[in-house]
Image 1 (cartoon, rainbow, N blue to C red):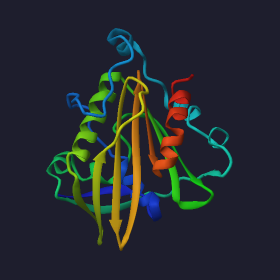
Image 2 (spheres, rainbow, N blue to C red; image 1 turned 30 degrees about the vertical axis):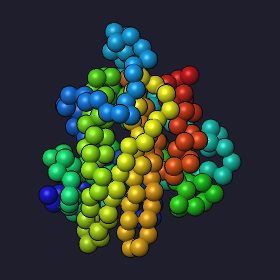
Image 3 (tube, rainbow, N blue to C red; image 1 turned 60 degrees about the vertical axis):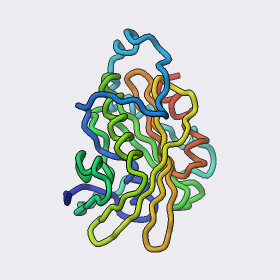
Image 4 (spheres, one colour; image 1 turned 90 degrees about the vertical axis):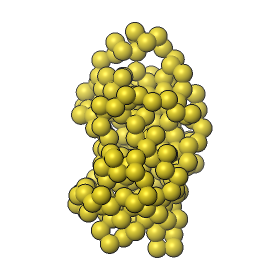
Length: 229
């Protein structure tokens, strides 16, 4: 399947963005080993109203939250690349954009990316989304199930081939639902490991991606701020 999608341009950001997929929110939710039991009564969970994008922007982590050594990256101009997904029928069914990046298919969103000590190999990105809890659950489960259901696949971006391996990993007991995966991108003799953890708390979804150590260090703080605690 060859499609035209938007990806970022260079370095680890170009690889890490593959772990931030676009998805449809029309699928039914599915159970995954990394999903958590609900921490709230279902009625209360469903009653939470989605937050505006402006409020989500205010609840993104910033340099003060992260500590010394972090610098927020300016948004990069989007590039449009032809993308082909090989070896993963589930991602083909969702479309090539599911394997290569872009925003999740929720209208209320905000995002930021930071480097640590100006190192391109130590980046962390945060995306916040808000929608009805059932939509967040369904869309996130669908894409995580598709990606972790293919332990190995290949992505062709223009003339560049990137080998991708994925595996589910444990998630701290946070929020109402949670997902996490470890992805290794191999291209040009170089491997880049990216961890992606997603936590849903009511009508807010937090996704933190990047260097595994940085994701583990900041995921609980990201959730607390996103949830207004």
